[in-house]
Image 1 (cartoon, rainbow, N blue to C red):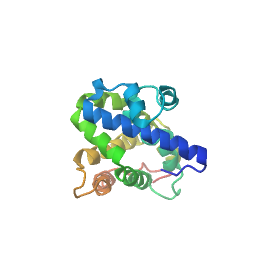
Image 2: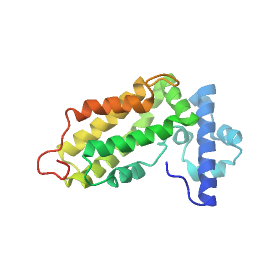
Image 3: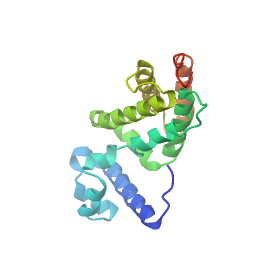
Length: 201
């Protein structure tokens, strides 16, 4: 993720990460139902009022995307115009995975979701937002409508490659997360090509 540019932004990001870290740690330690917003605030050293400046619920602190879907979509749209669509997706998501895999919070969150699969439906909304952002970026890159079958199928497949890589990944073992993602994208690139006449063909 791009680093904040000012002191105020850095402080806000540090507070957000402290809350996220506290929430994930407490969820793993005590179970999701036993943790309150007040518990998270006490662990992070902030007030409940501060908590609600960043997150609407305790689940959002744990399960929200580490980077806004719109930001990720913009990264895809901003890739060089001569890149094929799947190459642009590969580069952006691989970079994101490299950032995430280096953080303890993301690793703990991934393990939490494996330990508490009942949380997975709550992640669905964030994943839908991410898929919509990817589809919008693909539409912009190819000049195709956002509801075009190539756009929608490719976006869904890329999100599927994300899930497949995360599902296979084990902390501290080989292959690492980025390698697994590239392997998943290799599968897609062998089959997904833009339709003739589109900007990415």
